[in-house]
Image (cartoon, rainbow, N blue to C red; front, side):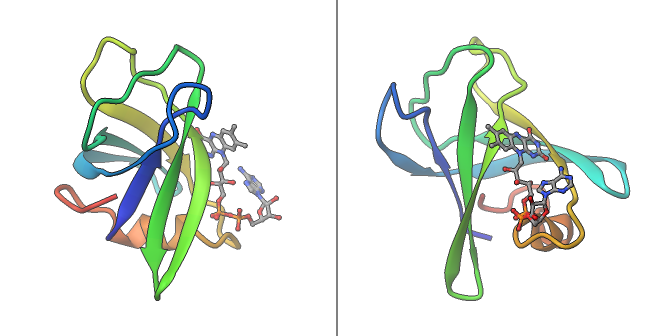
Length: 101
Ligand SMILES: Cc1cc2nc3c(=O)[nH]c(=O)nc-3n(C[C@H](O)[C@H](O)[C@H](O)COP(=O)(O)OP(=O)(O)OC[C@H]3O[C@@H](n4cnc5c(N)ncnc54)[C@H](O)[C@@H]3O)c2cc1C
């Protein structure tokens, strides 16, 4: 899966190809992913990043709050399934460890 992470706009305008290091399913509709952003990625606590996923030739981008500390190398996100949504149903089935985000 091709996923891109966009740093908070005020800091830098750049896309990275990120990789899922770890995924934990906390319930049927909630999972947490740990992501290697694929490049230097600075942020402040409370900021969000935009995750972009290539799906059927189309890029879908959504905002996700960064729940990890700015001092950790990996970024962590909690993702809740929105059954009628565009991005989360395909991620629910398609974001194994090692996958590209
Ligand atoms: C600043 C910011 C931070 C965010 N952080 C997170 C986060 O940390 N974790 C997270 O899971 N999501 C977060 N979101 C929501 C996320 O960006 C997506 O909207 C969400 O994952 C749904 O994406 P989707 O493409 O599956 O659904 P969409 O196709 O975007 O939405 C389909 C429909 O469902 C509605 N909808 C969207 N989200 C919900 C919801 N949670 N409950 C009920 N209806 C909903 C939409 O309004 C729309 O009508 C954040 C959004 C913003 C703006």
